[in-house]
Amino acid sequence: MSWFKEIEFAQPGFFWLLLIVPFMVAWYIWKQQKLHGTLSVPTLKGFNIHRKGLIPRLRHAGIVLRSLAIIALIVALARPQSSLSWQNTTTEGIDIIIASDISGSMLAEDFKPNRLEAGKNIAIDFIKNRPDDRIGLVIFSGESFTQCPLTIDHDVLINLYHDIKNGMIEDGTAIGMGLATAVNRLRGSEAKSKVVILLTDGVNNAGSIPPITAAEIAKQFGIRVYTVGIGTQGYAPYPVPSPYGGVVYQRMEVQIDEPTLTKIAAITGGKYFRATNNDALTRIYKQIDQLEKAKIDVTQYRKKTEMFLPFAVIALCLLLIEFLLNNTLFKGAIT
Image (tube, rainbow, N blue to C red):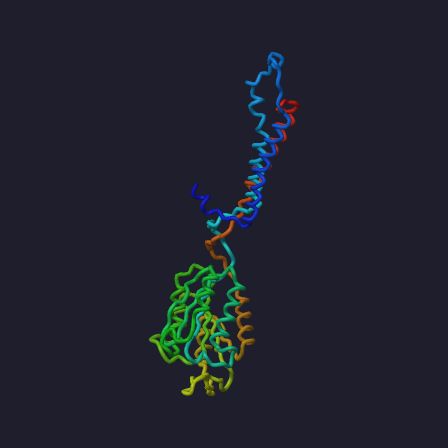
């Protein structure tokens, strides 16, 4: 049967108990031989036993039923599980695209260990706290692309998030392109609530789509944009490779286009936040976490479905049949 190929056992060590079955059968055979023994008589006329009836033929049914019951019970203890089960559900959630700046300035270390890594770690915690949402990831620098489309499989999303790093695409800060790519991923969504979380630490200086134009497009599709300016006030330490080996730090001025980010949020019905350190960014994500939720239909993959109950029921039924036979049909019978 093809379905049996998909069965896995959570506790396969219990199969060692199957060694009990041959020992039990051997003990039963030895006991039967000892009870019957051997008897020599000159004639068999005094033992006119009718051995062609049903009861003598079924005299070993008890040990068979008991062995099968023990086997079924051991299989149940090994916890068989189905590894292939799809389930359609309706759950509470929203569709979210995180659009993250990965430009060179994100390597500044006013966040620990730097802006890019801090943003990744805090966003991953945010993802873990919203298991019912479909979430995707867009990254941008001098251009933009989708790192992960909308998905309910957050393990895949988190793995892809871990993989992002500066240098994956041409350097620059294409805020408009990053937002436009995120909007493109959400425009086909049927969720009633669609959100973009846009993180950047700079000023739009690349790309063919102005940020305000991208915001207007988002508004047309009913997408709210929450913008986050990431960077301390004033200057930030920025690592630069030393010609003598190692790294030296330069003071880099923090330039965030707050008026544009504020306008993007206002156009789309979102909100602008400024994160100056790790704790502030964590608080911002917690605020965004309080977003309203709408019902969405998702298909969830259930990796494990317990299947021990049928085997336990079979074991119980076999033992019950043995008990009934021993106390009715076989009661007082010569075996």
